[in-house]
Length: 173
Image (cartoon, rainbow, N blue to C red; front, side, top):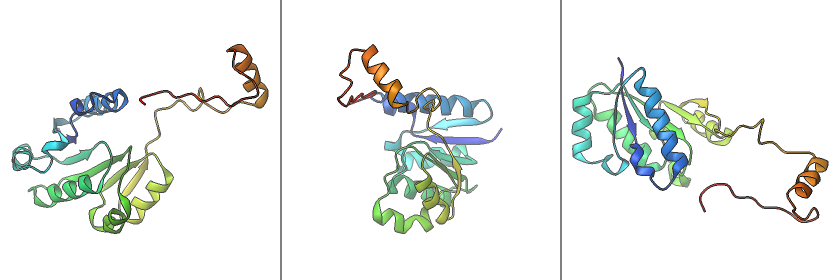
């Protein structure tokens, strides 16, 4: 089977349950069709990681979170220095590329970019990456805007003041 390397390894996200679960699901799905190895991002640019990657011989390097300019540089470094020249993939969950990173994208862009944002998808496509829309895991049918009448009804049902804004935060603070 094809060999893939996933960055980062799932234990990195102990404090962020959503990211940890996403990494676990990616790893599980990849293992169904690929021989997979995982590495921590903290090991990404160490000689031990490069040697492990060289021995493993991946066809694909997939950076799951970010990307950042650092992760794109590391992906490109590994791609150019490994014997098989693996395909690089970045999943754009929390892109943090900055102005300098955008200027470097034509040289650092991954072969494939999985995007949750049209803006980032266009930026990476313009830099030479093949892009695929990677929708957020939120059920947009279940969680959708409601009519003003429905909003008033729901506020009354839950005992909230109907004439004041309501703020709800679901997730980590």
